[in-house]
Image (cartoon, rainbow over all chains, first blue to last red; front, top):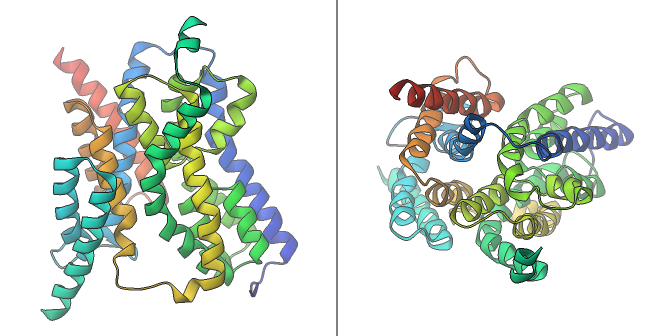
Length: 116
Length: 231
């Protein structure tokens, strides 16, 4: 394993420590601050909307943005493979089955797009 | 306390969380392998393992390792990685009411195990039943436990990972099924769609690392305002 970078070994180690600390702060701060108080109703309602929204936004990015480019065409294999995955997830809510069908759909989409 | 005694033991609850999350851990594994492969050219092997165990955040690790490999300097790398993870503020805030019964000494552990996947599985469980810190710890451990060997495999066999079996789609597919597990009412569905649209629409204005957080903040707030206006 090579470490061919301009940054020295120590720098990289400290970089990782700083990144870990910064990430832990995001993860810990709300838990530490909000656990003692009960939130007002509107805040609870607002937070209830957050999980699905974050996930949907990340999903939109991973399906539609390929190599930093917006790829809103039917020639995007991620978009094509999402169709069977959505269908299976909707009908079954089965994690493994959705992943299997999505991956199979991705392979098939790439195959057919290459034929065109 | 009587309710506590009636409920299954901690171990059983932890195990349930672990089992519920295991299929998603399979979807995370290819990403961990990909990180290991990128890290191989960017840092020492032990540093990659150190990163996977302490930072434990796929997107940030991947982006930071790529930046290192391209010769970026430390400060911008750390800033980028920490900013990518800002969405965890929101996730941590959302999960707090469901896990705050844990001993405060455990909070750092609970916090460290927060990932997109463990968060989504746990929230789906908590909305359907009730909050449970041990289920959540089990869920987080399932992802952490797969992330370490996946990184190691990527470090050693990075270039030899099979292509053309659709592994690239494992993560998007797991996000899709998680959405169906998470969304329970029309307001949540509408907000999620709004966030997805905003995230894409805002791309020219907001950089990719920020767009998911900004879109979520905007869509959830907009949904609350619109709901309030209809009353």
